[in-house]
Length: 371
Image 1 (cartoon, rainbow, N blue to C red):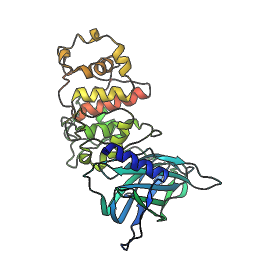
Image 2: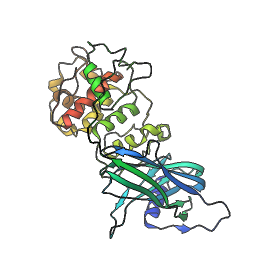
Image 3: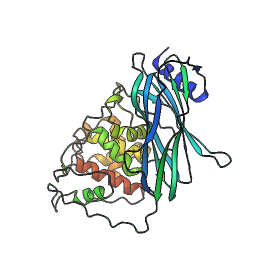
Image 4: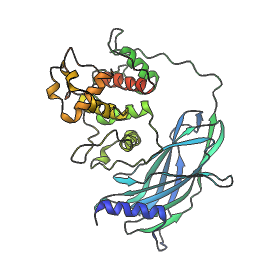
């Protein structure tokens, strides 16, 4: 049986209860908690991410979490496993009956015949909500089903609960002025875009007071910035990335990359890797951007004759040509210099910020030239 079949069997078993109860063991039972890394007070409209942590696990290969919440106070945004590699089933949202709490059911299994099981203390999953209504509310972990590779399972009722205070801001705070970065002069071609992106929280500067506009951007960094800017819907399945190098994806980017994969923005390479730390090229950046706005079909219909003015058009990979055609036509990108697309050149921070803001404006129906 292949690892792909095994992971499907385990996930289906979790969701439908097709598991074998484990024999009672003498080991201490696992304990489970829910918590947040930030303050437990959040403003209406802001997102808050809750982490589920376990202690004293023993040889766990998959799990199912049942989390209760009040949908009047909180809107579920996304869920992601904090264990890699693995496969997650679509989070199931169940509406409460007779005034009861709503529930999210999130199941995950590790993959690979030689993959080690989870033992000891471990962060299992993160769930992100958006505060919808002012007041006191809570999120509870009502049930955990832990499954071993042989499908024997143990079910726990931890009752772990997190109290949250959602507050309504009476007067919106004055926007903080954009920092004056030491390496971004008033005449820098991307200054207005950099200032705006920082104000929107899409990107930050460095502790030494610089922005490093010429520094290359990695694939993980670009995808994370893009998802934070466009905030795509999480109503469909959000599967944890199953790239061969998924373990190399940092926790800070895992949820955003999972959402991008789910929405078809990124596919990875032919060898099954994502290469999160690799510098993203202009061809890759442009293709991901076109997918994010659903423009690739338009790009395939446009004539490539419009690109004859670029001296390096022949150097653009075939898979990226439709994206470049539509991106140039829609004003999302410009060439480097007078006639160069530079498809294989790495994308720097300034270019990435400018493109992401153009995408944000395009999504709102207002494409602007930012530099």
